[in-house]
Length: 287
Image (cartoon, rainbow, N blue to C red; front, side, top):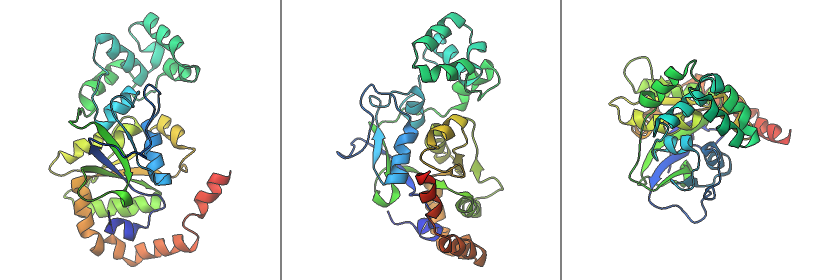
């Protein structure tokens, strides 16, 4: 897909389209059935290596990953499940209403996850707030498609069922995108910064914004656990800005006569290119 935004932004990393589909390319990357994997890895393969990646309800073993991609939410499928996830999202062992069952879950988990389960993710200060987030804060989708794909934007056709575009951005690129988004929207708040895991910020929250009359961009890569996962793939100064497709299309129409044509923006881009656009990334990878 040709993009005026990309031509002017000249981003360091490839923007990634989130596509709902009933098929997946033969060469696409996906997790083996039953093997746990974070969907942020799939997104990173598209952004960093130009691969098509994705999954369905069978290949995405992580409950949170399935919820984020729009493949159903089962955090509150039972009271036991709700208690467990509310504890994980808040303060772990001290937040659960059934310490015996929670300890059993911790002991059965892979060793590398036990500390996380013990402390909890601390996204909420109480299990009650975590429960409220599960029930009403998390966007809930169970889409009528088998797969969700992460596709490099340059490999995505315009007529595909694209739901959002994820831009991995440094601070300069973020400033340009946020200014462009704000220029086509009423009001003073063009960006949503929701509480939740980064997998939700690059997909489910963007789906929900797309359903609104005035959809906002969604900022991500702000989750402590998500940043730890992505640290081997992106620098610490890289965030994500996900554009719901309706907003992306409005920004595309404006991109050729926007902040990207100002002398200030051109100066920023020229300085970055003169210093070597990818020089910092190569240095990071060699460490």
